[in-house]
Amino acid sequence: MFKWFGKKQEKKENLTVTAPISGKLEKIEEVNDPAFAQKMLGDGFAIVPEEDKVTVYAPVSGKIEALPKTKHAIGIQTAQGVEVLIHIGIDTVNLNGKGFEVVVNQDDEVKQGQKLEVFDKNVVTENKLDPTVIVVFTSGYEKEVKLNQDNGAAVKANDLLIG
Image (cartoon, rainbow, N blue to C red; front, side, top):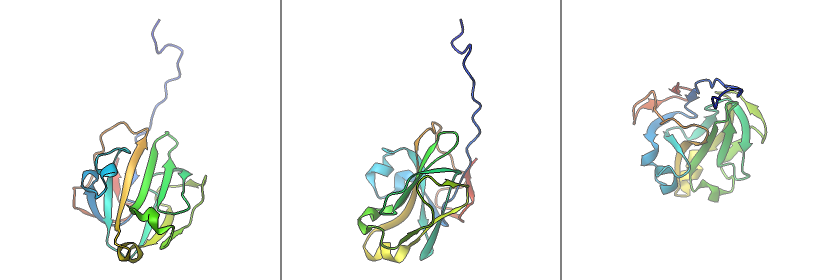
């Protein structure tokens, strides 16, 4: 018998991913954090914000699966089972939420492009921290991350980057 016989074949939709913020696109390998740069958490990309008040939008539609009290990261799981981590800044967990205003809750269903939070880049940089926003596919995305924009490109929030 064929191994696939009797198994339900799921058709996976192509995942589209948009920029969560406006800024300069950067390869994940260039991020100033070895865990991200070495893709220990997964492949992805980063954006260096330009504005002082940075609005973070959902790069994918799905359910909020992780929302630490420190407000420095948000995890979204898509309907296809892809887990996406939006990590705001490097070592910003140490700010304990200072400068961050989240507008969603744990277990909320969000749509791609929906506002998730706002953070103050000045609070991050005044504490000598890196404000780079990192998007990592922590599970369920097996393809190599290929972006529609070149490294160093200026992107606007909600620009299509994958798909």
